[in-house]
Picture (cartoon, rainbow, N blue to C red):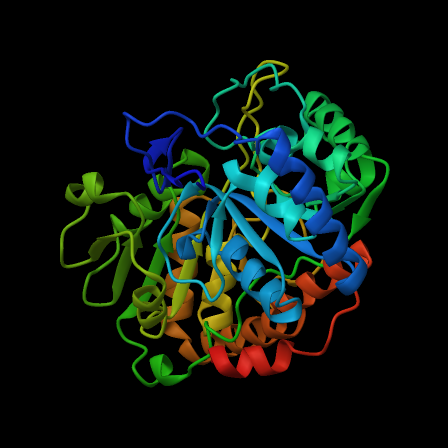
Length: 423
């Protein structure tokens, strides 16, 4: 019998993630009995000879629509390679057009289905999949770490591919780059758009920073028909580097008849810091609810900052990629972006053209918002330019196609049809 998918929901180090029943233990691999293993190998071999290569997409929490790019990348891969199999360590119940198998059952399901290639994202998850020992700050039962599939991959000659992104276990420190280099030696193909990874880790394939579901977050101009009050949004998780404290302090001295802030994320406990007249705290919103809110918002605030590095080998020192996923979704939908850029990454967005780059300082942000409120036409022009750039350069189908081609798959041109179906 297949192993049951385990539910997982909790707050882990400031991140809200779908979480587990505390009575349930971390899932463990379920190996088929010896007599069945031979049948699994035979069936998989026949399938590979008849149909060629087959991909398995593996994740620790899937399908989780609120996770952003991981969900949308999987959806794009499903459009481009419909026979892809999907596996998740923990059970989630968001809708997805393909079945999702327990990662614990990978040894029985994937070889029999003729899987030849495995793809996943995030360093700490891939380290577990590759059979690497946990990092110095880690723990063998880390809920984000993947199950050790290394023996299965070797036995059935499956290729391992993965993407290394900001966060997810990667830190741009000497120790973090050392771990990333070791991980790359365990993989057949490694992808990244992170400058520190591309410069400091040999053997990584550069891909575009293309991870946004532009067919879902469609641009709209209706918001600019009513430019007053200037409606702003902050949407992010709980780590201090995301800048909620800066956003709240910015609005502490703004008049509520001219400005309003919507706060999205696990921040209900801070509702009392601003009067209801100037701020609305929503908690987490589903994707459709967030999209509807985007259409009423003029400006998306992203006062992010780099974490201070911790001791060597610690998990401190994360710098989010620019723009963040939440900021990119807002840009795609037609919001004007006001953001810090601690990494000074201008590969896609140009300051004062596609967005306004500002330090995460309340006084600076207040002055910027007052400028935009006094010149809504300028705000609209920046919003439209940013949205057009995101839709041209950062669509998730661009990134998914690059990675599949980098793995050696031939893909049909199904992306346009899929985009139309989702739009």
